[in-house]
Picture 1 (cartoon, helix red, strand yellow):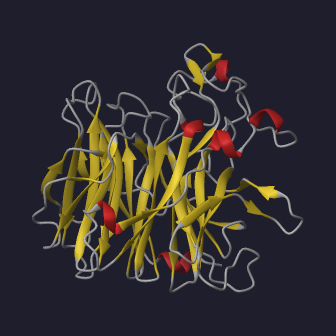
Picture 2 (picture 1 turned 30 degrees about the horizontal axis):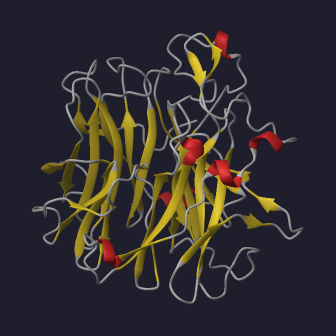
Length: 405
């Protein structure tokens, strides 16, 4: 199979791959056509949070570094006449530009004394507002990677407001995975695949540990098709599509947020027609951070995700260059489309590294006319690991709507 966009341009490359790692690629397109990219660096060679901003006026052929910011897990987005970058350094932080990313305000802190998480997932526009999700740590009871305690919080801000001010955001109610999903009662799905302890790692094989089950890295979608079972004719329901951390592959976790008459937003689980609650749904690559967009032209949802190829290999038999658990492959980016976010059609393999260490993962995307621009957290033979890559790569899938069949 021919890959759709294996060739790439490096936007940023680590000067020391052994100690400086490249993370969190996010991308937005302005009305002028300018592309805006954000990312952050981490690792033992980095002292304190460090995010970076780049812009391109030639559809990604060349890039200009526009500045740095002191937080991580950020994404750029447009609201009204302003461009924003929202992320966190524990608390939520945001900066604004009123000249297409050339100059920026000082960072504004939106919360106080809280711990947040996310990745550069999608941004949704409706009701003259922008909607996006950040994730809040609620309990701090889990001793390790606490995705079981994360609550995906849908945030709403009017596009004509100053979104560097806390009072101009509305936050949905909190629902953590550990409260919504009683893992000890699940059966028949094989969820979780490995883990049985709700507070600590389980060693599946030497050097390969599994944290408690959870959800994370949340996208937000709306169903506008009146024939969809989950369509809300009032336009007040938003669905959250999340990466599942369970040791398995091929499904996402979902919840929904319903806007109330007073403007508040309530987070809850969804139901199917039988009355049963649904949390896990089919999603190619749902075991890793994915990115979803709705394309108004094709009237399709597009899914950019990581393709697993051997998640059933015993952990102790994995090659040394495979990162962590069997389902944690990170070298192949795939593209799917769907009418309903449940039934996905394979559109193509976007890019593939030649080995497990050559990562192409944690990607973001944006539509630019007939093309789809993709930003990947990537690595090569110099990378510390498949997780800790050494560059951010920019790819373009030309005429992406022609992939529909």
